[in-house]
Structure formats: C-alpha cells, structure tokens
Image (cartoon, rainbow, N blue to C red; front, side, top):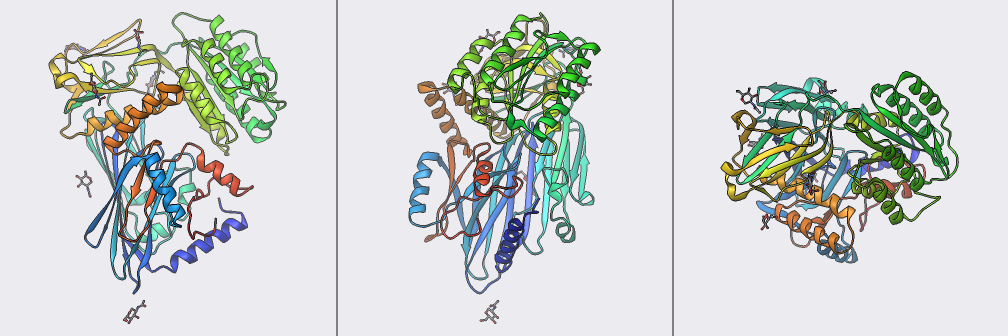
Amino acid sequence: SCTQWWCFLYKCLLAVLVFSDDWDIYSFHINSTVTSRYATTVITSRVANRMNESKEIEFHVRIPKNAFISKFRMFINGQVYDGVVKAKEQAQKQYTEAVSRGESAGLVSSVGRTLEEFRTSVTVAAHKKVTFELTYEELMKRMHGKYELQIHARPMQPVRDFKVTVDVYIHEEAGISFIDSFSIYQESKELNSFCLQAWIYFYPTADQQKTCDSCGEQGMNGDLVIVYDVNRDNGLGHIMKSAGYFVHHFAPSNLPRIPKNVVFLIDQSVSMHGKKIQQTRTALIHILNDLAEDDHFGLITFDGNIFHWKQELVQANSKNLESAKKFARNIQDRGSTNINQAVLQGASMLNVHHREGSASILILLTDGDPTSGETNLEKIQSNVKQAIAGKFPLYCLGFGFDVNFEFLEKMSLQNNGVARRIYEDSDADLQLKGFYEEVATPLLTDVTMIYVGGTNLTQTNFSQYYNGSEIVVAGQITDNDIETFIPEVSNRRVIFSNTNDSVESTGTVADDRIQRVWAHLTVKQLLDEQLRLSGPKKEKVKKEILELSLKYSFVTPLTSMVVTKPPGENTDVLHKPKEGETQRQWSSVSPSGSRKHTASRTRSGSQSGE
Ligand SMILES: *[C@@H]1O[C@H](CO)[C@@H](O)[C@H](O)[C@H]1NC(C)=O
Ligand SMILES: *[C@@H]1O[C@H](CO)[C@@H](O)[C@H](O)[C@H]1NC(C)=O
Ligand SMILES: *[C@@H]1O[C@H](CO)[C@@H](O)[C@H](O)[C@H]1NC(C)=O
Ligand SMILES: *[C@@H]1O[C@H](CO)[C@@H](O)[C@H](O)[C@H]1NC(C)=O
Ligand SMILES: *[C@@H]1O[C@H](CO)[C@@H](O)[C@H](O)[C@H]1NC(C)=O
Ligand SMILES: *[C@@H]1O[C@H](CO)[C@@H](O)[C@H](O)[C@H]1NC(C)=O
C-alpha cells in the first residue's frame, strides 16, 4: 500500500525516530471473552524504559469500529492512572485548554473499513516500566450466518522483540454449532472447541512477527479472525437472563423464503466514471443472476434524468433477466445526480406493485450528493419518507468518500433501513454483492417482539428478517420476576412462543454482562434514533445516550475519555471518530493519498511528519 515515495520516506523517518528510543514492549497480551455474543477484550501492553533518562512511551493499538472503549488505565511506579469517561463537550473544553497551553492531546482515529486507532503516551523515568491496559466491548452482529470476531494483535509502532499472546474464550449457552479461526501466521494459533465453549490462543513467535510486516493486507481485516455460529432451536430462539436483565437472540433459519419485490436505483452520474461504474455493472449482473424466479424486480438508473429499464416491476424469469443484464452492461456514466426523483420513482414502482405475502425492498446506490432536481437534503428526506410511508425498507449504499454519508444514513434510518459505505477498492463489486446477499432472503416481515413482564426494551418491531441475520432484543425483567416474564414473537402469520419453557433455550450468567449488553444495544439504537430526529426530541435522546454512556463508561460519539497522567504531564482526550472522518481529513492532506495508510493524526504540539 506504500508505493508513493513520500509514503516510503515517511515510514523510514518514523522507523528511525522510534528505533532511536530505547524502550521495549516486553509483553503484549490480548484477552477476549465472549458470552452471549458480547465480547469484552482487554489489551495489556507492558513497556520498559531501558535508558538512563526519562522517555516518552507510546501506546498505539487498533480496535474494531463497532466497539465502545470502556476502560483505560496505566500503571506506573505502583500508581494507577484511570481514564475517565466524560461528556464530550466537557472534555473538549479540557482539550482546547490543553491545546492552547501547547500540550498534546490524543485521539482515536478511524482507519480503513473496520478499525479505529487508539493512541496515547506517557513519560516514564529511567529504568522504569509502564503497563497500559485498554478494554473495549462489542456486540457481535450475525451476518451471512455467522459471527466474526476480529483481533488486531499488534501494537502499531515498530518495536524490538516482544511477546504477543492472544487468548480468546467463547462461551455460548446455546452451544457452538461451528467455529473456525484464521490467522496471518497459520501455525501459531490453536483452536480448542467443546460444546458450549471454545478457547483459541494465538502465540506467534518473534520470527513470525518479524516476517509479517504487511500480513494485514492479505485479505484479512484482523491478525486473528474467529468465525462461529451457535445452535438454533428454530422456535423462539435463545434468551439469557441475569440480574434482572435479559437478551433475546432470535434467528430461525428453517422458514421458507418470502418472494421479494426489489428495485435497484443506480447512480450513473459522471463521478461514477471508470472503475466504479464498471464494478457496479459487474455486481448488478451477479445480483440479477441470484434472483429467484418468483422474485419481481425493477431497475432505474439516474443522473440528472431518470431511466427506467421497464416502467414496472417484472418477474425474474430468464427472459426478463437476460434483457435486464443487457441493460446493466450498457450503463454509462454521464450527467448530474437527481437522488430525489430516483428514490420517489422507485418507491412509486413498489407502491404500485404491492403483492400480498412478499417483501418489498428499495436499494439506492450513489457516489455523490444530490446535484439536480431537488437538492435540499431535508426536503428530499421528507419527500422520501412520505413516499415510502413505512411500507418497505430503503437501503442506501454510499460509494466512496464523496457522498454525504450522514444524509444517506438518516434517510435509511427514517425508512427502516440501513446505510452502508462501499469502499472504493478492487473488491467494491464484492462489497455490493455481499450487501445484497444480506437482504437476499427475507424470511419474515413485520416482526413484533413482545415481552410481557419486560420493560426498558430495545427495538421490538422489525420490518423484515433475513436469513443469515439475527434479531436481538434486550431489556429489563420487571421486578426481576421470571414467573411473569413471557416472551413471544409474532407477525401476521406466525407466532413463536415458548410454552414448554424449555431449559435448553434459556440460560443465566452470574455477572452484570447481560446488563451491559442491554446498555450497549440501547446506546447503539439511540445513536441511530438521534440521527433520525431533530429539535427537542433529538436533545432528549442525546441526553439519554449521555447518561447511559457515562453510567456504563462507554466512549461513544457523545463522550470522550480523559486520560490523566503523572503530575506535570499533558492530559489526553480521546474521542470516537465519526464514520469517514479521518478519510476526509487524510485526503485533504495528500491529493494522491492512499486510504489504506495509517490515518492522520490531529495532534498539536511538536509532532512532525504529517
Ligand atoms: C482473561 O479474562 C478473563 C475474564 O476477565 C479472566 O477470567 C482470565 O483469567 C483472563 N485470562 C488471562 C490469561 O489473563
Ligand atoms: C547508563 O549509566 C551508566 C552509569 O552511569 C553507564 O555505565 C551506562 O553506559 C549508561 N547507559 C546508557 C545506555 O547510556
Ligand atoms: C437459510 O440459511 C440456512 C443456512 O444458514 C440454509 O440452510 C437455509 O436453506 C436457508 N433458507 C432459505 C430459505 O434459503
Ligand atoms: C426503566 O423503566 C422504568 C419504568 O418502567 C423507569 O422508571 C426507569 O427509569 C427505566 N430505567 C432506565 C435505566 O431507563
Ligand atoms: C409495533 O408493531 C405493533 C404491531 O404491528 C404495533 O401495534 C406497535 O404500535 C408497534 N410499535 C412501535 C413502537 O412501532
Ligand atoms: C414442546 O414440547 C413438545 C414435547 O416435548 C415438543 O414436541 C415441542 O416441539 C415443544 N415446543 C416448543 C415450542 O419447544
């Protein structure tokens, strides 16, 4: 990824700077425990200053974007320095003061598709040691029929010999149906799997670590990737309870698929020129090939104008598919971007073509902001909301970094969908296809999760449930009374209930983990909700997020972690970056910038090289 001369030079410079520091990471351990698809990971790095004088020692690691940091501590000279989670505005004030005093402040920045970087530093006296300990928590999301845990098992600075060890413990009361792990150094990992538990350890030798400078590029997002799934009873699913809280995982897979009505809205504005339009064509043809015969579909391309392949939805029979593929092969880039008109036309096609017992889906692919027709973002959002009227989900795929992702995200969330970023890369067609596969097999529509005797529930209504995904609901059990707690899942045609109250499908854990799952999921959903809202309602939700984040010590977009250090040293303030933030920042730094490069740092003080 580092083919530019300036990038090479930068790396050399960095290496020289760091290697001239005589400090050793003598132990680097990652300990991850997963219970009920909730992973708590602790990174512990022990560093010694071998010099006769005090040195600034850095801690720099990568964590998944999806996670919330919940704890950071440093141990120096028998003293513990705890990071404190504070309201972002309050911390920001501290940060600004630190900057104006010429002190440096730390930052969490986002890198690539799935990772964020955390960095901070501390001055350590001659011949003394420091231990850094970072904890983050994430709720694993089932996609394509599996959960995936990624561990980035390296400190980000070039260092001498040190020992990396990773231990991952998985405990799933429902039983593990399959598990596999991949590492960049195959021979260094070991998988021990039993019915309910698995232990994976990853102990690469110093030699393996050295020979693997760019292993991360080999199609893997983490140094250690663990994929697994759990057993399913195909009934009500699995409910875990503890200390008055519950979490319910619902993912039946033995249901028949529901035929779908799907309309694809494809941006063909000039900005799609070249590789992007080519990859879009490839993906579209793959997707068309995957449609089932009882699916109906429509295809609209748009720039400043709207082009219907067919005025209405047609059945996915081979004749129609051939004709659609021919149309797809001939999509050319030209003109501006009329998102408003395209989405309204797509919605109207689906509204006209309503079929009882089928699932309608609208998918928008765009790489830019609206530039023609209606361009007022709020107006577009309200038009779209009105046209869709909650009848089907809208999925927005933002191609590259020139899209206003927040706009797409808001529009999707307002219409029961999600937005996804498609990274401009050689595998963009696979990303598009991968997204489509997530929604390719609807199994249920209009699912309502009912919990008599439950309170403070996370989202309970879901417009569609797709094979390979999962519905997760958490909440409190009123008065912790299990007797009166009755979960049920229903839609217009099926009811799942647990009349047998089978012990198999329920479990209990001793600690407060289920409560943290509830808090995590609640905060995630409230963050989406505040995106969708405005005015006093938004403020109310933000207040709720802030309270929960502070209570459970989560670093979220509304909170920051303040890292205090020994007297006389800078205070670091760590923020969670917004999606796409550093990428934008970076591209303003270097016109030919490669996005894979380590994200730029926003540090004041005497940093050089960026
Ligand atoms: C990993 O963390 C778990 C849970 O906190 C703990 O029980 C276990 O001892 C830790 N393992 C190691 C090797 O530190
Ligand atoms: C540290 O100090 C000792 C004693 O003063 C000296 O012998 C040694 O060479 C010094 N080491 C370094 C790395 O400067
Ligand atoms: C759903 O996925 C499972 C495997 O994950 C598969 O066995 C099943 O056939 C799928 N159902 C449908 C309707 O495609
Ligand atoms: C849970 O719900 C009760 C009312 O049902 C409410 O009084 C309480 O504040 C809620 N707790 C949280 C943490 O939201
Ligand atoms: C969820 O769906 C049920 C049944 O369709 C409906 O009665 C209820 O109002 C919905 N709740 C929310 C919060 O939308
Ligand atoms: C309830 O138990 C009966 C008999 O053991 C079994 O056939 C049935 O599938 C069970 N139902 C559920 C929902 O678990």
